[in-house]
Amino acid sequence: MCVDGAHASRVPSLRLFPDFPGRESMERLESELIRQSWRVVSRSPLEHGTVLFARLFALEPSLLPLFQYNGRQFSSPEDCLSSPEFLDHIRKVMLVIDAAVTKVEDLSSLQEYLTSLGRKHRAVGVRLSSFSTVGESLLYMLEKCLGPSFTPATRTAWSQLYGAVVQAMSRGWDGE
Image (cartoon, rainbow, N blue to C red):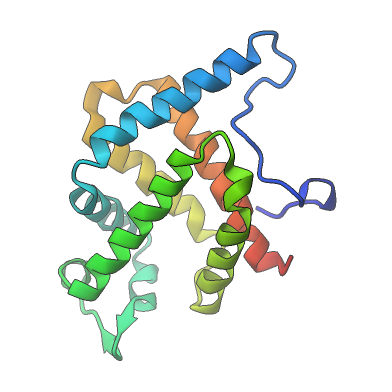
């Protein structure tokens, strides 16, 4: 997801219908849906993060070799998911999501951090296209965690938030 120069200076907020008269209340509703659903996930971030990464490895097994600690290559997703070093990585990912949820109405305050995070991911060989699979895995994890509470509106709100985060991270690939 490359960003054209006209929009490179900011991360988009959660705006589904920019010209809709009730847009601001709609944005508040989306933010609240994200916060409410995250409260459930954040009770067990490691457990839910493990669901996210298990799904990611199932959908895109080619990502597994990117995770090496002290030169150790994991033989299976299960081997990776039980590694203390990888569990630390899951915790970090969940903290990034938590920061995005906390700053959902002011994602631009995370722009520099997310761009730097994008550069780090590019440096270790992550393809920008893999973030589509990460997004799918995030939505899968939320659906499994929330069950019937994961409504279409909640899915849309999270998709918007994730899209904004990836857009900021993609600047790390663009070199902006």
